[in-house]
Image (tube, rainbow, N blue to C red; front, side):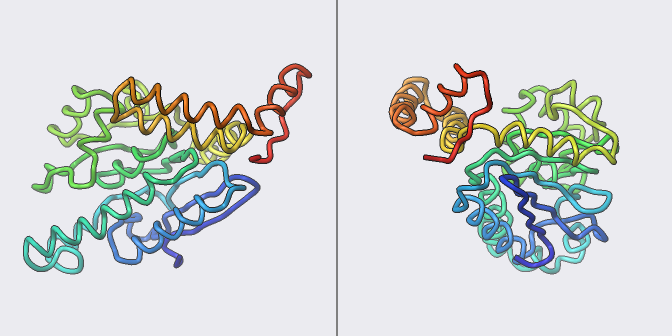
Length: 266
């Protein structure tokens, strides 16, 4: 990973910070693909990590794609339509998949505007909280584009089809109060309190048994696209594994002894 994506691990919490504050943390460069794939692999292979916080440096979470390059037809936006398609498939879409495929719960701490691709990236997280200075928008139509990063699938699942349609078709921005009312974020805080609150939420998550935590996320994700019968079958298989773990026995002991569990991922 280079400096465009900062990785920090503190205890069982990993923090990923998109770090190009001077240009509002756009995404899509080849280095971004490498950074997010490396980060995702590192997190998934580190059994000590139980939660991830994703945020942006400076005043923006992410302003999405680089609109100056779009205007100039340079960088990722140069060349033929076939070349552009391939850059989406093997560029931006790889970033999206890397974040989506993180095995542990992800909290998006939206510190400022999350626009276009930036909003889609926030929607990849399992939970979203924001600064009171955040703004949210899927403004693709305003620049003559469609949601090309998976947002057409993600956003309706989070806020419903009608709200998602309103955001997309009007290309308007909404503030944290509206975002909370619509279910896009859980809550919002003063700018200086955001990361403290994100870490509080993360600390409440990392107390859980790590293997059960990862499997629970997997089950929720699979539930978005498979039948109820399939989920029941997956649940039976996963639950059988959990019953035979040391952490399950430790959780039962902690429950009856009225104490916090000491879970080791065994």
